Image 1 (cartoon, rainbow, N blue to C red):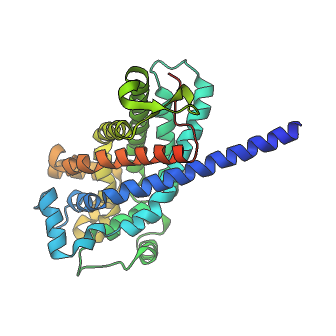
Image 2 (image 1 turned 90 degrees about the horizontal axis):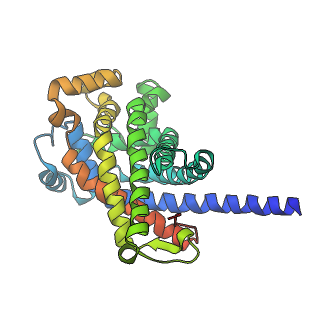
Length: 322
């Protein structure tokens, strides 16, 4: 009997992980595709592309369509999809696993309510980005290219070229340290804020934000508008804390695209210092922040909402103890 019970529990665990991987991967693809044009113009502005650095967000988007084509708004999105499915699948699934075991290990001993969600979210983000970072570098290189000035002809060619000409695997992980440092507040605050707002909605405004779902813990499920609102706010908070390190990461990833930008490939602190000394805080470390809010809020909102909707469709628990 014990072996049968163990086998059944093992099957349930595998099913839980597979379903979360699927829901997380699809959620990531939907969210990134929704904001792909804003992602591309953000990269061009962050890295001071000579063709776009004098433009704003909307004028930059118009210029991309006029100079290149409408489909150029999605340049690099193929590499993004190759990266984002395993990234988002790993991040969401790792969060569920870490949350489960941290909740058991820490109990109610933490001074801040739901602080275990911050720790689980940060750890999940670090896990995911470690496994998929080279694909992010490749996507950034492809998105930074302007029609008529191509150096790379696709995902594989980009990876091989970087590996052979810029220092092997280390080159594919250029900018990894600031990414890890930025991932801790970004993923931590994203998951913490979403879970905290979800708790507030379920506990204090269930009539406005929830509907009944007997199979869920607490017997409630967030309605879609509430999911979007919680996710959007979580994205705004997370980006505010982590953005300077995102700028640093992009500058390091794109450092070898032009001789004049090679100075940004000499390490995280050096890159941060150069950005600050040359452009200051708002025009340097927070350059492109307005577009980041425009993309981060809907991106995180769509990501969390799609993930929860898919979990519900797959009959996974999306409730919480209230």
